[in-house]
Image 1 (cartoon, protein in one colour):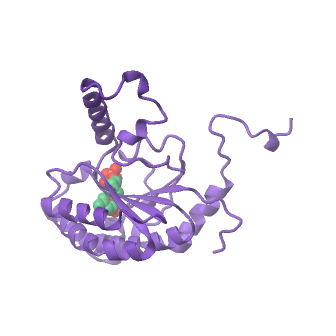
Image 2: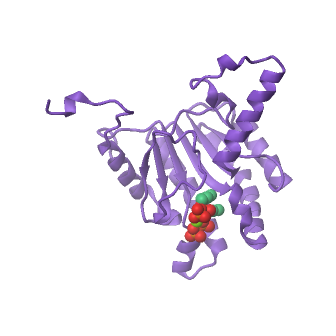
Image 3: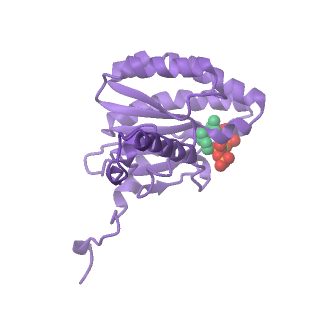
Length: 244
Ligand code: IPE
Ligand code: IPE
Ligand code: MG
């Protein structure tokens, strides 16, 4: 689709949901659903960056997802470890810097933490766009973590309380990214599930029914068409649109 007449968000965030239900509908296992979801992410993220979006955040595994069966969690951890291995080359080829958000400690396995750090190191010089992958991520955990970082700096006399502002708070989050402009959650669920609660404060939200493995370029186009129609007022009023 031609995007020249569409509004291009700077930061798009996607809650990658519905892998399990997609697989069930196809008569496949949940694991196969996760595999297809990850394949789709590679194709879709390439498309999204080619359309001029600068930052793409994706929710791949929440702090709460550790409540799932041991088998499903271990399948996903192995999938992350093997998939992310290829991300250094894949993203370097596209000029995309990869960053990860979430707690880098148990129960997240060491082999996943090691790969995350390798990919970040290997892609840190890229400037065309940022792919922020959220793993062992929770919005509450992120804010608590930021609070601890700030308290530590204050206690060490490296930061004064009056210097903590709305402008600089985001530098204490897992990654310092611009606010989310458009949030997409696939699969028809209409909730945030602890995703980027600080960064989503003024995001436009879009909840397609499509399951993530089937959310392709044409589905993404529809999200951008819808986003273009939204009147983002940020609490103000667009007087030129009003008949007064
Ligand atoms: C999203 O798909 C992927 C992860 C949470 C890891 P789900 O696994 O939540 O799929 P559904 O919601 O059960 O269909
Ligand atoms: C949110 O999806 C987390 C990810 C997509 C990674 P879930 O499927 O875990 O969320 P709930 O349980 O429906 O809220
Ligand atoms: Mg789900």
